[in-house]
Amino acid sequence: MTPELRAADRRSLVDTVVEQLRNQLAERAWRVGDRIPTEHELADRLGVGRNTVREAVRVLVHAGLLESRQGQGTFVRSTADPSAVLRGMKQANVRDVLELRIALETEAARLAATRRTRDDLRRLRAGLRALHQHGPQPEGAVQADDDIDFHLAVVAAAHNTALTEVYGYFSSSVREALVASLGQDGMPRLDLETHTALVDAIESGDPQAAETAARNLLMSPLRAVEALIPHDTDTRP
Amino acid sequence: MTPELRAADRRSLVDTVVEQLRNQLAERAWRVGDRIPTEHELADRLGVGRNTVREAVRVLVHAGLLESRQGQGTFVRSTADPSAVLRGMKQANVRDVLELRIALETEAARLAATRRTRDDLRRLRAGLRALHQHGPQPEGAVQADDDIDFHLAVVAAAHNTALTEVYGYFSSSVREALVASLGQDGMPRLDLETHTALVDAIESGDPQAAETAARNLLMSPLRAVEALIPHDTDTRP
DNA sequence: CTCCGCAATTTGTAGGATGACCGGGTGACC
DNA sequence: GGTCACCCGGTCATCCTACAAATTGCGGAG
Image (cartoon, rainbow over all chains, first blue to last red; front, side, top):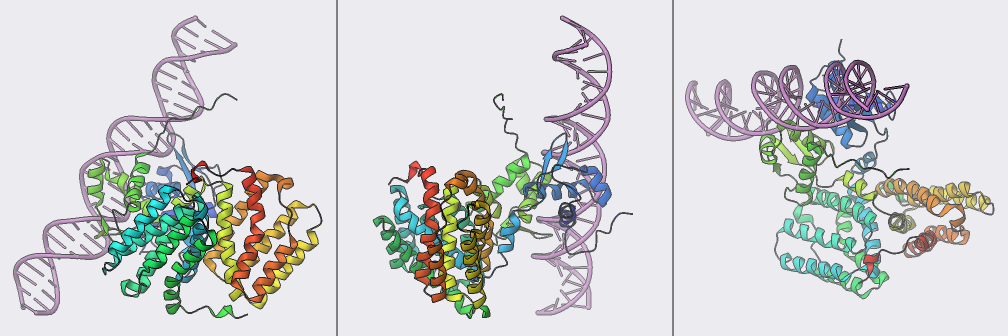
């Protein structure tokens, strides 16, 4: 008797198989280095087609949990899913993630003040021009992309790979969340003067000034979010 | 040992397709909410079978980037790619990750100054006592754990789940990297006065003082690392 | 005009065919 | 006896056809 797979009708068969495979790893039924059953055997045992098994296995291979070797089989590479940390991050509220982004970008601005190259400054100035060009128009989407590009340029000028990667992830995720929760109308107006001040501070090479300018720049979306999401009740001393 | 012979690049077709799709998202050729071409059209355009496309799409669906709806098509759900973050993190050196940690903790200290509860302060004071107790002894490992606990308490006092999660993820890896690269001898001596100053600043409720105190606290390991790892050559203007 | 139902489109699943690759076994050759 | 080319079964990689299921949109009946 094949195990009942149709318990959750709304989910695809592949998702069900992915979960079953994950459970095998979580329950230590399959250890690191073990060879898991062949596609054909898994398909037989789960009562699904080989294509379904292949798609599920491919997902876990790409997640770093499994490793397929042609001609040999599929082996367990790791039982800990590192992407789970970042996946759980999506459950944090918008304010928390926005504050996290502020933490990253203020430090990035500080570092950029001492490390920016001529190319960095060129990119920052170009970003300012793009903002100025699209600024007066109500084209929210275009302006939002220009804004993202500008902030990415700031972080890139810090010349820190880890910072750039992590910021890039939360930047787009925050933007999507902001647009979703506030809508284009609720988005705070871009302040060109503040943006320019940040670039000037970075160019002048003053870390403290750059950090302050970055903080000023990032406070307005934070305040917009805080207007919607009240502070937690557990912040009383 | 004999020189390592590296196998020729043997990337699977599916991996290639995954990368192509990812590029479309990274370059914003496909925006959030867009419908991407049908499986058949992608297979046609990429010159691969529909099964190959399906496996690649399934990977991105599971990564949260795409969303497939039967009968309608496949849509862009998000452009924030967590696995790209982890991939880039492997290339980052210790200094970069340490600076990232500084970015998180200075902001955490700033937030903690306004949000710390009585329990937070209790935990911070307890952390100080633990450091003081083990401080004079040369038990590097124990002291390092106490140090980590202390810094985790600081971040927890900020009451920001996103910050806490990300900081926790990097803090352990930073400690491992520090011990590995510096060794116990190279680890800077813990400065109890600076630690105490940070707690005092958080208790007094002064965000700027807390940030400054946190930065003072974190600069010494950074300088120790920078002594070993020279700045990149690409930081000259 | 509304409502029902059918056709078209698209993803979901099944299973087969073929090829590439790996490991081990076999046997010829030195 | 040792070495090595070759074959064979097992496994994954890719492609294919076929059909199922879900959704949309259109067109005709009422």
